[in-house]
Image (cartoon, rainbow, N blue to C red):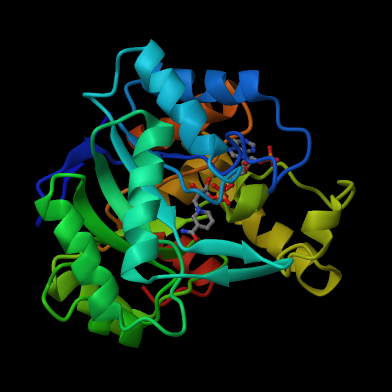
Length: 312
Ligand SMILES: NC(=O)c1ccc[n+]([C@@H]2O[C@H](COP(=O)([O-])OP(=O)(O)OC[C@H]3O[C@@H](n4cnc5c(N)ncnc54)[C@H](OP(=O)(O)O)[C@@H]3O)[C@@H](O)[C@H]2O)c1
């Protein structure tokens, strides 16, 4: 599998990562089988993958625990770059975010325990909070970096202004936000800022939660969760499926799957460092990894951009 190296931290990992909000993510998806979760991680490692994206929020620590168990049992801790995140706090049935230095320091230490590791490669502030000056949050993480507990500092779901504030001293290594053919949460100004500041970008939900795999039709029985997703609601769904047919034609021509085309498109973007498709089975992991070998021509990229109304 092809690898990338981060400009600032020098961390090296495969550009096809593994998203793990379904690994032990009982609070996100119903009926998660933890044995399947472990098999998914094992399949990814067996295929040569070395970049795993997790978070405290995924199963409230359970994703980190399961990943830690698999890495220990397969003796792969040395080879794998782990990115994890924190900010979620739950108080009186309310979901909030905390970026305070005390919270972040505690979160890193607790994540290290759950992962059974001495160091976290990439630590993200999962979501911004309203109160903590970003500079203060980042200097707490820089302190943890100096102590050898984390190797790179990242933020996720930050606006451009919040990112600029957080990166005032040039300490941000990586950013993650939703970015796929249907939904782009960041604009060209954001992209230019990341490129000119050597900040890596990891688009999340690269398959638009499965829609970009081409497995959905007008007849598909949608889950409750999907029925609330703007991409699947009536006004948009049929039109979105038509766009996917353009990807299917390309996929057929290249003897691959719709998902590989959608993921290869992301990998073709200059500002995308690596991708983290999620999976619910080891078979899906194998299918997603296949995008690593797909090269899209300029003409194919233009057709995709036109279809999805992306400014190329
Ligand atoms: N930083 C953040 O705030 C944030 C937010 C969201 C996600 N993330 C990260 O990004 C990762 C990816 O996002 P995501 O999991 O939400 O969405 P995604 O990668 O766009 O979609 C993953 C889902 O699509 C389906 N799927 C995947 N591969 C498939 C294949 N080859 N064939 C058929 N179906 C397939 C699976 O669900 P079904 O089988 O149920 O259809 C899978 O759970 C997460 O796991 C997480 O690590 C980060």
